Length: 214
Image (cartoon, rainbow, N blue to C red; front, side):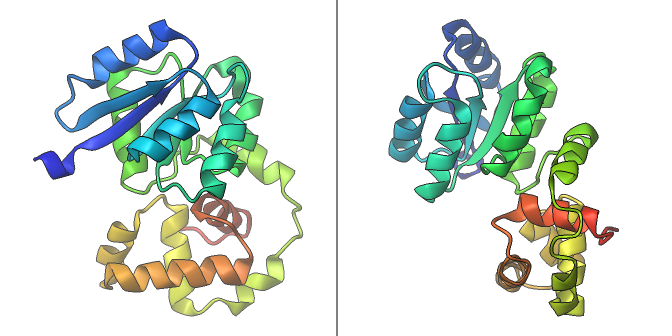
């Protein structure tokens, strides 16, 4: 169905990469490539114009790079989920990208089916964190920071936070806890406010760091 189609924007400075991604993604029944951009600044402009569901974003690009573009999209409150496409040698740059608001990342040599799965996953509200990157994020955090904040969470908020750390979307959390999706959104907002966190990625990392996991 048309209303189930995931609209994707490709942002990469290599035309051959964009062409390859487009060729594969266009054969997916539930994914539509709605546009392309060759650098971060153009990516931001296109994301504002096209309002895609998911942005596939390279990190290293001339001019405005992927991390700066991510920060701009967050400042603009653009609702698109951003999936970073990077090479293994750029792994260290993934951490600041996630801190800037990315929903996850895939390597450039990712299996095509895995890429489609990653797009569907971040669109559904999941956070894609591989163990080595989650570890790097945790290591950079102040290990003692914010421990006391967890005591202000209600039992229900802790249950929601546990499911966030498990990568569940609001819809999945609502189903698991037999709540409305609107109620779950309220709990998530309260969790972020009480823990002084910016987004679900930070909430998931906070939960892991403080042992609030399933």
